[in-house]
Length: 235
Image (spheres, one colour):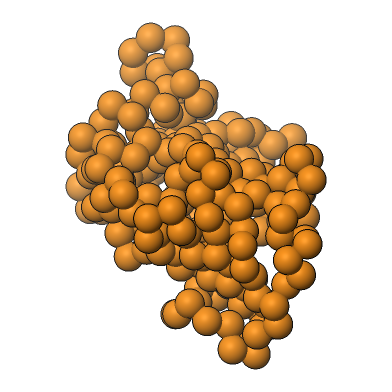
């Protein structure tokens, strides 16, 4: 059986998790002898919202699964009320612990704070209607775009086609205008799609790296793994 755990993190740790392909948590510092994921989401939300935002400008709740029998070797510690339960993993065992993680690490909640240095006017949050799209230099049919919209709200994304939910998951952004989608439902479930974004008034442009490599510019050339979309704000 799989045990679901949660880990509240700041922007720097989240970036290192992303660099691992959403498969591992970074090594602990010398003064950090214990890696302690928590056993319930409510506690993780409290830490991300009330501590990580103050300490580093933004907080994130990550969720992952690990083999229950393996996790049982580590003690559980109550550090406050009954919901404040942590799994204490010695830092020297974190590498093996990471190897036992089942599937990708996902982001379930995002607490922006100061958006990690991104100003509010430059945020991609909102509901957006695609007006132009191209894949590998080939323009997508306008008729298809008219039926689509993407909603980016509080770290969660939803793509709708014809009013029906088509794709869902989580997303992160950073001060370097990098956006990363982490699919949880639909055709992109389990996928990590890195991208670039820019906001200009009521226009949002995103260039997606469908092959898992982050684009370097807002153009697709003839690369079939690059997907560029221009959106207009709906709300």
